[in-house]
Length: 374
Image 1 (cartoon, one colour):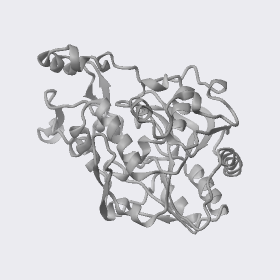
Image 2 (cartoon, rainbow, N blue to C red; image 1 turned 135 degrees about the horizontal axis):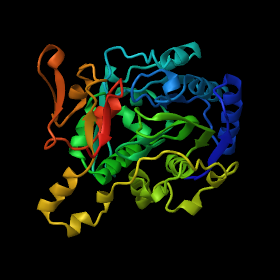
Image 3 (cartoon, one colour; image 1 turned 120 degrees about the horizontal axis):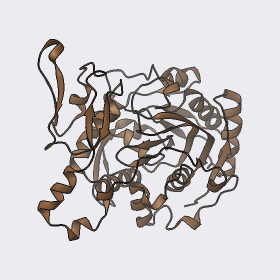
């Protein structure tokens, strides 16, 4: 597999400029022959938020991607995703991604309408996934990630975006099944092995820094990226925001398998290089001290629980919280519950049950949940 990542500057969400720069990047990254293919473009919609919040792939970025793949001869273009708490007949109205897909002649698909079993015999931790049945209808999957930080996985990009094929709230059950970062990363890599995305366009015009992937802050980065190698793209993007790529759990696991590439020097940069466009003041999620893999071998079992209990917990700001209950619905470990009546009603967290997956933090529409050691 080629490991070529094309990085281009693009400082604003202007439809024509996005189209030109993204097409230039795709050409430099050797976009494969698409003639006659049915293609699914998979944006990142962790929650259906308005574009200016930088939570989702921007609708004009999606428009540019649709124009490009249509020009290169695809026969059918589908667009869709499945956010963490998805209602019936989801149309991505707030993010404007659904209307953009339809306006540009693509088909918006509701991932949750039907499911299928997807085998992954090569999987390390997961050999069978229940995913959206839309995968049966397409030849290619193209990932359209947004460059963002992530409270659990530090960074989220092209490979993590494929997690959207797991339907809605079922995602949280994977956090319970794989509570450690390393195991969860291995599951994400297994899913990429099973889905086999063929290309990625990354929206890094305005990224998200700080407590991402949904409660962070928009950050001007001014880049678009293209690659047929999702791992290589994630290595480049994480480097640009100042992370050592091998410290990102998904990247570390994917590198260890040698499927996409075995080492960083194998990556080619036909246009800009990550070091030329690095954002030195990007606010990142700090690496957790307890992540050392030697813990599994050195620390006795009783002390492992103590170390886990020192990990940052979700903390609810009762002045901001409106008691909508979304955090309770998404919590697969049943650590959150609504107690009380009327104005005294509050969300309570059972610290002993919390697995620190931070799904509640991701899903909160009002940013009322922080991640803190307090």
